[in-house]
Length: 193
Image (tube, rainbow, N blue to C red):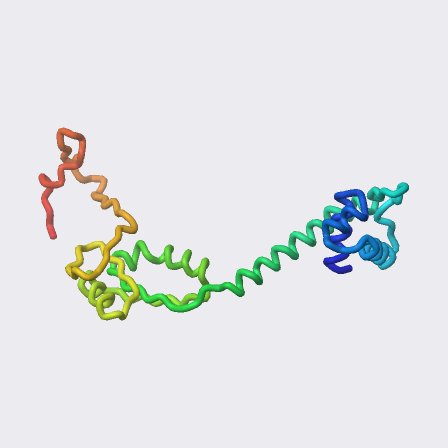
């Protein structure tokens, strides 16, 4: 059984006519008939009942049709995988990131990137904002990720995400002071740094 035989079988089954199916597939009517006869004789079954100039699915053909379609769908999926692999993006990407970003924000994004582009080699260096800026300026990193301000005038900056800092206190801590607008009044808190 070949994929071509399955394609011809499905086309004939869906159109109920050998000549129409052959035309749609770009083959001769005799080639389509020969493929159906070969499929039937290889397995000792009758897939179609011939009714005058038309044909209709036999009981075995009805049972076989969903399986044939499933095989063709899987073959198409396999073909797509090979097409995708042949167009694989390769190379390397060097990232410099501040410690907080590298520890908390970056890992799951790196994992997602690696899943989407497994042939790209990733390298990450970790440092403070100044070190990240220097790595990008010196060409040791393709790009940098920082949460602090940078000083260089020749670097382009873009916001890629925002962070929501949270204040966490013990359950026994007294009620936190609020502003009249209903926000936390951090200026009135005692800070020990």
